[in-house]
Length: 317
Image (cartoon, rainbow, N blue to C red; front, side, top):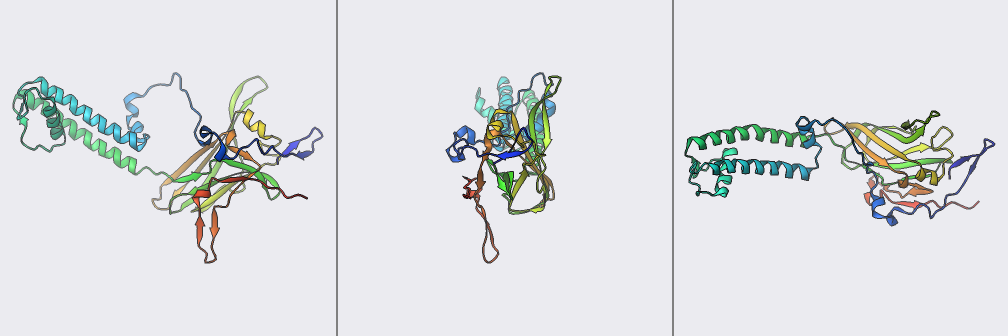
């Protein structure tokens, strides 16, 4: 229940319809893909082209990264194979007119393997081999450098709950979501910042995207090892004060949660980001317990229940 403003200045409470917010396990598949950033269409942006090629490779997923490198390597050798084929007799030991033999010879040349069965036999062949070797000497270290840079990128393995919930906590309506450190280490001096993106219209009629930082009950953790429930109290100072569940869906709002800290293993600064759309916020729901402490002091976290929520059951007076 959220407090709703009255005209007389007092606040009243209301109960949201339990059928309005369906449990995430019953929602449409596309609605379960929480955390996806809304698409951005860039018009008229300056093109950097080859200047951003290095950054473009680093931000590629691993599958696309490896396929791109392998495809570029094969296409480059195919181009040199065509050049060898254009000079008949330029490669000794290759079958006349065989593009496949010229392709394998280019691969052996660029990688400096050189099995010895095929070698340049003419001046034209020596010139193409020289260009092939220079290309390999320049590109192979670059590819290795990209691999090392991508392997050593400081990335935090942080899991955010798919949904945020709104339910009472210590008698105060509270917006909550959970965060977990998936790795078996600690994030030192972890800091959480939650920002509300909301359309705002000025009295002059201008419309722009406004950013509001939400105050949290606790926004820092000296060592983040397991799970963290992030809470924002919905009081009179909260931008959510007086809003109903339908208001969350009708207004173009977005919650952006950013966690930063120092990786306890590599001492590198890491960060993680997650976005919540209005449909990802469940009213009158609570999280299932995912962390248990045994009698011997052993702490157990069940990631299978990390995203699970249940409707809030209120006790009758």
